[in-house]
Image (cartoon, each protein chain N blue to C red):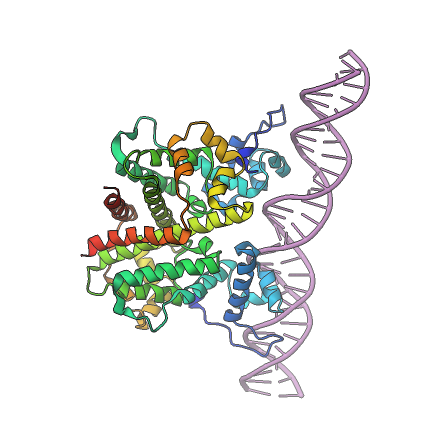
Length: 231
Length: 231
DNA sequence: TATTTAATCAATACAGTGTATCGACATGAG
DNA sequence: CTCATGTCGATACACTGTATTGATTAAATA
């Protein structure tokens, strides 16, 4: 019995009208401001001028709130009606991946939720639908499923990596490149031990590439891999 | 100033001798038994017959404990000395990915930590070193960095996905295939709405493939993509 | 060796958490 | 107008991470 199975309680002329949408919106606000850890049922309820226990009419547990928040973000990720299926699987997947990344930049806590549990909300399903439909008639179901799974795994991992280093940068106030050299004297000291010669070369000689560009380039590698199996 | 920067306190003839290794071992035990959420500083300390505050001589914060736990797992992931670099980048990367997955099956909480913050512990660095060294002389630094980043992103995402559905299965006591059909009546009902025709086809017609096999196959796709750019 | 200094320890305390319980209350039905 | 249903919010509980504080111990000095 998940959130998606239980109907919302009927609205009542209460001190403050309440529904899941409002609850989730408040939670998303809090998370945008202070990360997932800033989301507590008490604070969410407070934003809605309600007692904490009031929420338990709409949610069975805090995890369910996270599920709802995630699905709310999937709503943002869905393609506009306009940009239809006419563009082929590759463009569809690429666009979906990039929108997901953009959503994660707007809502950094998305990185903590992505891939954390199966997403079965209506918007997550709709996103899956769009993606799968883009392969209609192009390959057998299992190949398509594998293709989508592979790309999604990459997207999840890449977003987590990017957000993780974004947070680390923010915590130290340095760019990633500088941060790698200055992060505590630790990394520098480790590299100077000579125990990581290859790694040292990469840290020193590597080019600092824009995260968005890296994401797109790597994504293209993965899409190429898929293309090779679809054709 | 991170964990890696601070030396361990000198051992003292205390009621119970303590060091980071022992602390991390206790934390890992707890996490193996009850997941990350079962790890509290109080419980870790209790396992070591120590007061909770005692740990703060060895850790500055709970997050640091997680960092140490993650690095402890990286130690398990490192290749045995024997199986050296002679096998080429592809085998090196593949083996690393599979060992990472195996570690995640032993320590499911790894899925929650992977990609969560930059890993700069000695073992994580050693793992990076081995991986990067496998490309020595085969391509320019930036290409190699991109290759490794892509594969790692896939591995992170794929492991999270697998552990997530493993947990969901366990929670409902059903196989994934059955679970998709039975998960709350929700998914079934959603699919029956006809709003997700492509998705419905995949759920009904898709073959239930062993997770390990899927991981390996998809990994090979990604490795192919890398190969195409290295050669 | 005697005394001071420094460090480590455990206890206490605090503010916060998710959620179970339960009495008060308001709403709809009869 | 009365009664039953079901929601609401207060209280309570067990637990969390960690700041603070004195006591106790070991090391350094005289």
